[in-house]
Image (cartoon, rainbow, N blue to C red; front, side, top):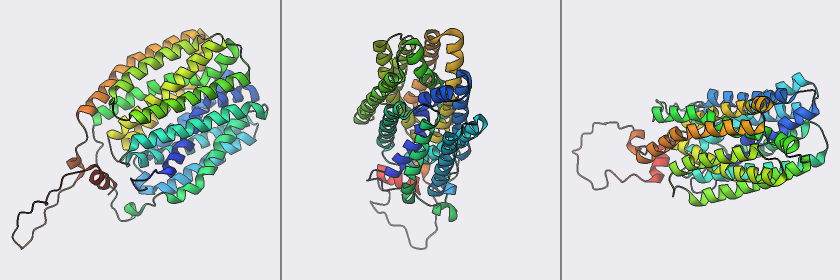
Length: 414
């Protein structure tokens, strides 16, 4: 989609537009609850419907991005996001809000699928992923600081997502058209590393559910349990997202030095402790400490999980499928957090989520160890064709050149 020696800003922008809706989930659900005649559980269900629609788009399009073309598919997704979120922001009718949220969620999932496929084809996917996480964290932080000052109502966070999608549109002209598909050169074949990919895809919904169950009710923890104002909660979220920026910068600086097993396994265990601590917060210092620590760790581990999925298939199919599986957990997160907190209270909810994270840390770490020990072979991506010639073969020292990362990237792109 762009030269491997330059920063692919269109992919970073698409990543930002696709991930912004999950990042704004607490304020979106909270505003739906306070601005519309809905209960907290009903507002959480709308958030879940939005993210479930996003996951459905990922599963549907995982193997079709190359065939349809990144440019056309990105524009379709951005259009759906603008129409869906924009329409939901402008109406107060609950059925129309639900329909707009579902339509916008499908657009977000479409955009994310294009971004994930393009990032997987890069020679430096971890760097591009960290840039995307930096961008979406910074934008979400600005929204959290701004929304409380724009007055009441449910439309502000939804309008912010729609405007972000609209702003990304001009960059889609630099994405590739489906030229390979038109010539019939789009590669086909089974998914590599099937066992590892399925294990990661099965664990990812649980991991995402725990994160977004807390994230979906964090606003209510701050307002109802820690007795803070909306302005204070928004400021805490902005600082927490700033800590996430620092975490992503650290992850980008570390790169693959620690491998993937340590960040995924140990990072998930630390996240479990942060979730339990944040869910039990009853004042500003405890609430701020829990949210800031969790937000600093979450994007770090997420960047390594995305990199792990990318390493399983250079065409990006596992990246899209694992990301969509994560979106299923993300979709169930707000509803799960709302139900657990309503029935057992926020502290018990945090403890349940923490135990679940610790249980799935082991299989995710095992996948990371397995892929680290057994990288994807370059030769497996090359089709050898024998062509008969009349001239006698003469030995040449450069007949079989050494494979390099650039040649591997070119082979994957072809």
